[in-house]
Image 1 (cartoon, helix red, strand yellow):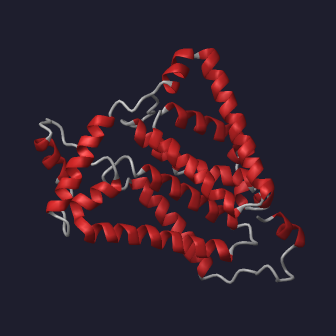
Image 2: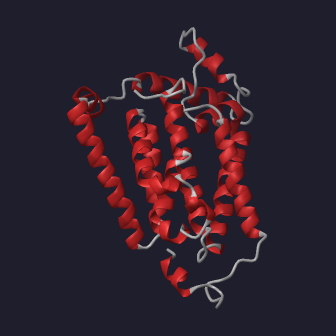
Image 3: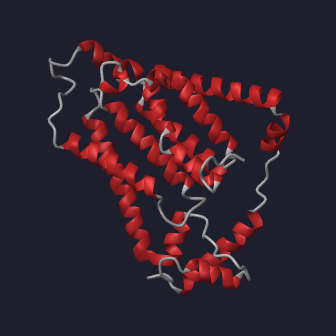
Length: 273
């Protein structure tokens, strides 16, 4: 299982999800971005290759939560794009999946078989943790047991010498901060979606649209994976959140040309979603 410089493969998968969906959106809107500063980047010239290697690394993490997050992010992109761009994304990912399959099948058949036969070996342990978390939440529904305290409760209950995670941000929020903390968490997530979706509407016919769509897709991917791992948001998640919200706020406070504005090039409007 690939984990790179991270101690846990799940964290590598999560880190990849903070970038990969954005790059896929850039690939789909490469014609729109060709006049922007980012298109002049050396890396943008090799975007399909970068997407391939990041997808390969994500695959090798064997993190089903990360895979589910990635799939969900792609699904979240498609409603905002025309069929032509959607097909471009789907074809690219199918080709990448085919190449990954061929490489593993020829070079490392053992890895290929291990991925195909991968089972949820920790299912029973996770279910025990989820069951105890639900029990603990019933005892402390309003304020929870306190930030960082679930691991101690769970370790004692399950006779473990190690602190145990609730295996998910949302489960952890419920049991450690109760309904008050959980509602605050949902408010944060829903506010993010509202701000970014508003920015998407405002940038519909501009070259800023791919940025906001990429942010939306990556955020969705990370949130979905957070259903299955972690007990708090990682540092790079907050950095990602800050960059995307700051971009959305700049768009909100800036007067952008509308679809009917004659200053917008008709060819650019035709290219947009």
